[in-house]
Image 1 (cartoon, rainbow, N blue to C red):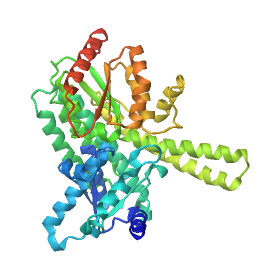
Image 2 (image 1 turned 90 degrees about the horizontal axis):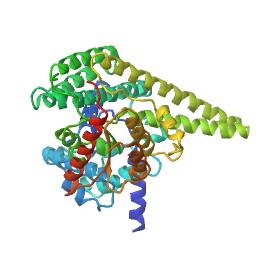
Image 3 (image 1 turned 60 degrees about the vertical axis):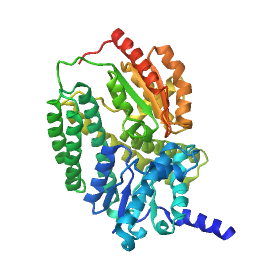
Image 4 (image 1 turned 180 degrees about the vertical axis):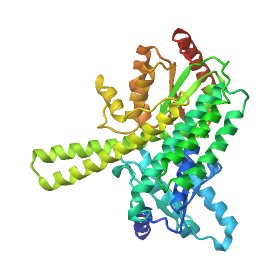
Length: 450
């Protein structure tokens, strides 16, 4: 028994972490569909054989190898990797070699179960003799999701920059989808258009991402936006505007949230979801914040060695954040010159909102920082309702709900919590319809222009 436990701990340290992806198949779970495929395409442009796994097809496997107490995204992603490996093993037979694959499962620090997914999934994979050899590639918020150790040292920064830019473009394509679909001339036109556009942008990132030729990428994005504008029926009047916040996986994984945006649209909404890039900007911003705190503490004690170390971190994270904000602003400026898309905000602005009335603090961390401030920003921006999407029992999102619900009552803006697990809640449809009725009443009192 003791030797088995020792082996388990050894596997957690030796088979979870940063590994070279050279000559490996890099398996990426699908969270946001467009972002996952553009990131995979970017990796392929750097010579990495990246593949987005099918999602939600292994849900029964995920249920079988979890207890139900885990966070819902853990159940889904566990099912995704087991489903892929079992199908791959069936297809290749004796030629199947688990060491040919690296499964990508990042993590975060702080009070969130996401930090334990890859450890738990390591234990699950080790329970299959045929899957023990697969490594789990993990990046962490502790260093702002640095890609060091995955490819040659001289290409790490270029890969990070191109990957980040692919997420920004994916966010814009998502917002283009949500901007057009409620006003499309014929049902289904927007979905077909976005699916084709995603394929075009995959090819574009695979060709130009490694070269960092972002102007070529934006030129192609311009063409896509111009085509998308032709789908809009200008005779359809504006609709109530609904903002979504919450846990990043649930709010972006359409199967997990039971196609919430489509449901809201079906009841007459135009919807905008919080962006993927927001989380990356937040992790960089928070590491910069921590480095500044560390520097100030050591300055008080005149500890020159740690001061120098923290100063280096400050300069590094500050440079990363400036670059990310520059690229994000560049892409949105181009897109917004062609169509009225919702712009993203700076993380410092969100922290400022929390500080105004001492609502919450970045010292606590988690997505609650973004969700609470994001909800207030939606309300101030004239949105007609806000939805908080999260896994059942999620601590950061439950915290968010407790803080913002009385605030939204005070502001007179409809608010809805939508926790999800693998089941269908019988009252969900009624709750959404009631919420949309309230949002429509708010919209009539506060109409907006096209």
